[in-house]
Image (cartoon, rainbow, N blue to C red; front, side):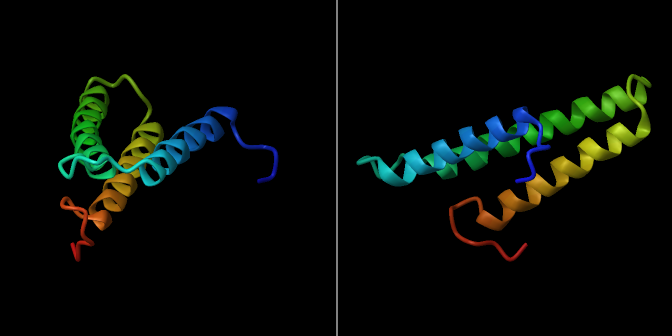
Length: 94
């Protein structure tokens, strides 16, 4: 870290790390509960909704194109990372 990072970004990373750490350290005794898998499924649903909202805002001219492209690129990258984990918790080739 350089010290120039936005505190909001650092806080988000801390929250994500705590979530994953907790899921690893305190696995559910219920075989049906896989928190990382549930997270990936819900996050994918959120990404679809976020992408639709950004595209709607773009068509209404509410944001400048560079900002829209930046957000869409971020969503694409996050979606790719989720796909790499696989929907069933196994690595995916696609």
